[in-house]
Length: 264
Image (cartoon, rainbow, N blue to C red; front, side, top):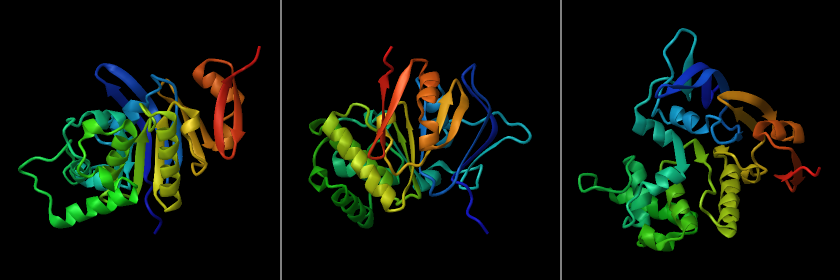
């Protein structure tokens, strides 16, 4: 029996308030299929993330479904053990006094920090220390978020997702607020995780964030899949110029892609 798809969306209609964001959205991503979902602001990327995290649901209708690892219904904490989310929005939800180790431990409780009624076990604390060491930030365990750089905070947040050793990691605009050095270091870390077998889903509007280990790119525009396929076939001058509505030239180097304004 074959493994279920990591993400299977079929003919989904999705609203945010009174606004229809998706109508007839279909998207399938297999386990182990590292994928970037690229699109401009307003393309529907944030709505797609909320759909995957079960913060919102599609309109119920025959023939339409959203399945994650083969299931339509999830208890949210169970889902977060299988699908780790890393986002700037989640990072900013943490009180500034939370320590690095507690940020990682909060992954066990799907919370932004620890609470007195949620004591961590010794085994959980050992696991948090192990994850921080593996990420190269063991020294941040006792440091408050307010005293960390944005890159250090992002690594602790990644540790929060990794405590469960999930099958896949979902990154929402991973280098937001990071300087150049911290952004490069984070991308190197993503590459290492991919080589270890973690499935990466990268949601972004920055082409240069897509590491060489991601082989598939989905272009999202105005709530629809605009293009989908192997990275080199999708990241073309024509596709990206139409996606972002500006003339662009695409350059590839060492497996990374970058875009430049097209010369007149």
